[in-house]
Amino acid sequence: MQRLPLSRAPRAVLLALVGLLALPACSDDEEGTGTPDAGNTIPDAGTRTDAGTDAGTDAGTDAGTDAGTTTAWPQDFSCEGKPQQTLTFNANQVQELQDAVNSLAACTTIQLGAGTFQFDNALTIRANGITVVGAGKGAQGEGTGGSASTVLDFSDAAGNTNGIDVSDAKLFTVRDVALWNAKKDALRIENSSNILVQRIRTEWAVENNESNGKYGIYPVKSSYVIIEDSEAYNAADAGIYVGQTRYAIVRRNIAKKNVAGIEIENTKFAYVQGNIAQDNTAGLVVFDLPGNPIRGTDVLVTGNTITGNNRNNFASVSASSSTVSQVPAGTGTFILASRRVEFVGNTWGDNNTVDIAVLSGLAIEPDLTLWSAGFFNFASSDVYIHGNTFQEGSGDMVDNGHPDAERRPLGALVGAVYQYGAAAAGVSLVEHLLWDGIDPAPRNESLLNPVNICFTGNTLPATTKAAIVDLDLQAVSGHLLSASPNVAAAWGETRRFTQGAAPFNCSGFSPKLALP
Image (cartoon, rainbow, N blue to C red; front, side, top):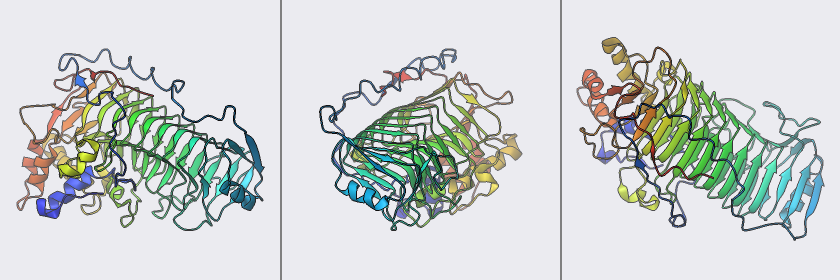
């Protein structure tokens, strides 16, 4: 994770900015290898439409129905016409299973019986056309397979190994198994294509344990990925993390008790539908990191439930995921350095800090050259939030009321501003949408919504006054963290807008999203 150099900003300002904006940078693949993405001609920066005049009456009707099918996905490997075989293993045949996997032929199905498979190493897949299928994923908390479930237990595996480790594989499927107590990532899939992850469960036995593995389900640098009807619990970073991938469908999954529930990172063309992200520190994150060659774009988030993400942050500060340790508890959704993201038909509520935050990537890395790999993808723009339901209970207790300026400066900064706002202006709740006000940089105060964030046609609590806040993070930080802090001046830099008020009363962007 790149940091603002201390030489460029006072340490206090550094803490505030990095804390607010660096939290999603938790990938251990952020070094960004490979070549720049040049394989897609779909524009990745749309233009706004009907800005400032639409009252939001058309919201919620034109998205979420035209994605989610994979029938047209290309496939550069097929088992049709090739020799195929099925290898069957029971729980007492782990060594035989490992030996078979080490010399696996293409187009093999590995059928695992019910019960508990105890591994002392990763289950490594390096062949095409492989299917791993068990008897069922069981229920949350089950570390032992039953008569209708298959648990792959990695509790005694070698340190720093993944559970199922797939690389350079085409046409891979895994379904109906649970992955328990992996040392690193439970399911890691890298440099692969045509992936189906279906009805699996990844879990660590101990809640709130920073020594748990980082990611539950983790496809990275891959293409044509489906993750569906699966569950992820207790990851010390993200339960489900799709990184540097083209064409991904993440649907009908459950992510609970992780630091971050679901993350979409540097990914093009993602459809995130019908998931439940609850009881995490942060529910759902869409973001780009500096140094990664894929410029993320075209992400549809629809029909998801993102509520009650107030778990205290248990990520390790010293591990490579230390940046995610700065996420304030109670973050519903984070968008950072992202573009062409549409939210429709989702439900937020009871997220103690904020339901949605839209942030710039420049605050985590101001050196433009480090964003060159992704074609200078630092700016957030074209975020269309319409036809969603915002329940009550959000924004009323930033970082669960336990701000820590060193470890979670976001909570400290926002909490301080709103503590003053409650006393001086009667604004006690962080608005449903928080925008940091940085992009495009440098800030032009005459432009109220230059990055085209649309917030229209959503169902809000009856008590809602303003729904959107332009925090003007840089100015607020300057006032709060100067040699003579001035919280009144900081509060004065923020601006609030009701739903239906210009300039956030717009109708998205054009062309429409290109989706899987």
